[in-house]
Length: 287
Image (cartoon, rainbow, N blue to C red):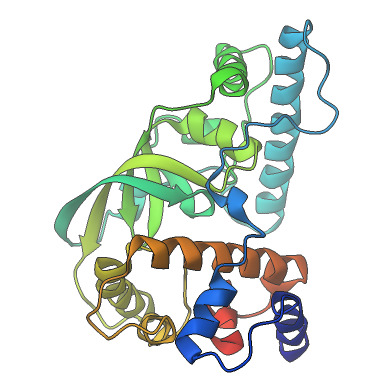
């Protein structure tokens, strides 16, 4: 872990900071690095190798076939690990869970990686766990997916999905194909109207970390940082030079998002996904 983080620190500090700056100023200079401004994009550009205009129908079906192959790979990998090869279903997850509150969050920029399943079981077998399609190219489903793909490339997908958040993971009520297409084009965030489902407190580590996240979210509205240990959100609040109950500004969120997106990309590129810690855990060590 140390070798990964040492490299990350060297990379992230490749832009020298002014001398004699305060901790708070230094932090915000680092956060303001503009290397990953595309984090809010929706992947409008076609993948490399796109064919020229005039063969759009063939291009659409080729996009679907490419997405299908990605779904089939994910399917086989899950089967080999003894895991379900389909989308997780929130209704099944909640069977023995006591939900104590439902909180409408309004329109939220959802981290694409945090969209992990569907609300009901109706269409969950049409997608692999990575939201790539599993149905054959000659189906009505494939045609609709391809048409949505074409619409996205022409003008973008503007209609927010409808989703539920549970333990800071998101499950789609409406818009599974939109999520599939946007993930295919490597969207980082997807707009959605979200309802939060709050579970009853218990002594499990996951539940305790989640309740820490709820307190942090009230102040920051940041939902893309995950920790595997208690105390991570409170420490992050301090590192951003905020008092324990101080709310974040829009500039705070934008600067942090720029920094964290860059940090996470480098962390994963260097194999951090194989370590027993999250990108958030590694970030706390770095900072």
